[in-house]
Length: 73
Image (cartoon, rainbow, N blue to C red; front, side, top):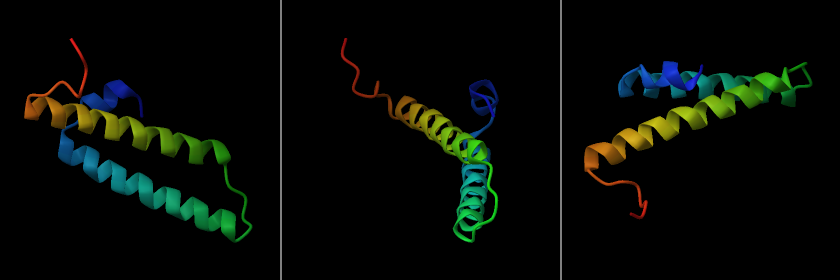
């Protein structure tokens, strides 16, 4: 999921997406722990996508609160 797709979704959908990705990450961790083959690139992609979603949600939260996130003028 790229940043354009993330920005195009509403916050509720993004929250659901984070839950789905966390479940998948957990499932992959369990597979790795039991010795099954796991695509390490997929684990990395999941972590990065979760970070992107959290970044967009944080930007939206700060915009709604009327602050600029601590940036200095």
